[in-house]
Image (cartoon, one colour):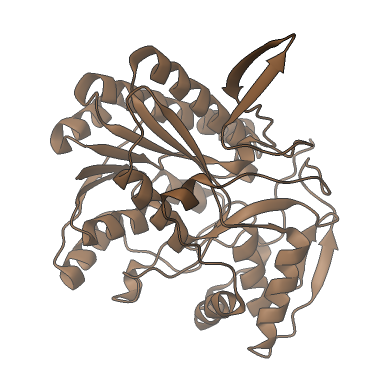
Length: 383
């Protein structure tokens, strides 16, 4: 099929493009390098420098013989997105083109404004590009499990059946995000649901947990194809930060009591999930919501696992609690459903010692590039 990937230069966008192109799909990627610019401006550059998108596509074609069409442009400019649709006539669009950091969105007025403008306008423009150019196109939007927050009831897959005063109905599951970034993702879901029920577009909204990992099948062909690996406090997920801290000889910094529990998944499984939903698209007039993770772990459990994996490499990994810079429940109930993707055929790759050791080994090769000063919290929710 013809697939347009918005945010194709990102940690997930670029591996998705490679995997789908390698499988024989016609891939167009669109990106404006916003993430690179923000990372540079906030002193949050990745551990390993990545070639730009045009260079990446050239390297990929050199080692695989498969091409990826590159468009440099801004999804918040409707003319740019409209021209991209005309250019590639997509059967499906994978939407990664959002500012992805909770801490960044909470760091200043300018960061908050950029997050709202970029995330909501890119989704709005995507909807209208579909309506005007490709009404049957399947939108695959990367949401986040962070939309749900940590309610004291079980988390369903997007929807909740309610009985009230003797009547029943089905509603979007209540959302209560913990950062402005996660709140923009709630707005995305609400906006998509409006246009689904009004115009009958087809949408799959993937509520994704934090992703970890450095290696995909294409990276084994050429390490220059590796996804960007952020380990700082703004763009680095907790697993990435812990891996780098272990290699650098820093204590693993647990925020607060460490009971914060989330659903995690390997980057390999992100690619697998996206492929599965592209093969099994939502129906016209359907907003299909799938919770995308493979295992739930607390921050304390993550720290223990990284500490144990470090022993295989003779790393003396210590764990240290910090005052939590965020406003969040540190100990809470957490029981989210995630059967939908398993029913579609997801075969999970879990966070084993071998997986963590491999990550430690890759980071160890680049240990001279670690900047310890960017790992500790630089953004606090309370002002």
